[in-house]
Image (cartoon, rainbow, N blue to C red; front, side):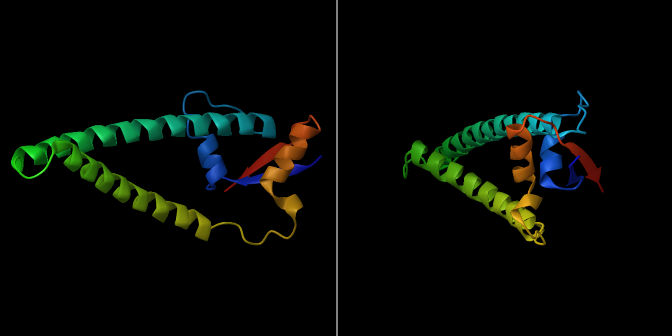
Amino acid sequence: MEEIVVKSNGLLYKIATFADTFRQRDLSNICSFIRSFFIGVFYLAVAAVFILLVTAIAGQGLGWFLAGILTSFVEPQELAIVAVAMILIIAGAMVLVVFSHFIKNANKDLTTLDDLFVVKAYRSWKDKYCVKIRIEE
């Protein structure tokens, strides 16, 4: 039987265990691992929407605060747009730094397409069996 090796410090494992603090799912096969991965992606998306909402509210508040200081010069909505843009640019730069770190540390010694996690997961799903997963340090 085929076995997939997942590193415990890898991005797939971190996303799969992101929302798994309370449930402690069994991640020993590909079926439960992918299910946990998609639940983690969903929770990360909800967290991103929440962060964007808080950012928009903070930018709006900052815009109104600056408009109170500079009442005669600009409209408060324009300052709010500038404040939200500044916050999003800073957050985007932070995301790019983290993403570039993951790209730099990606596994570059793959010899064939058969070694890819996605290919093994797709074949497992297509042939209706769950491949075992071994989690390494």
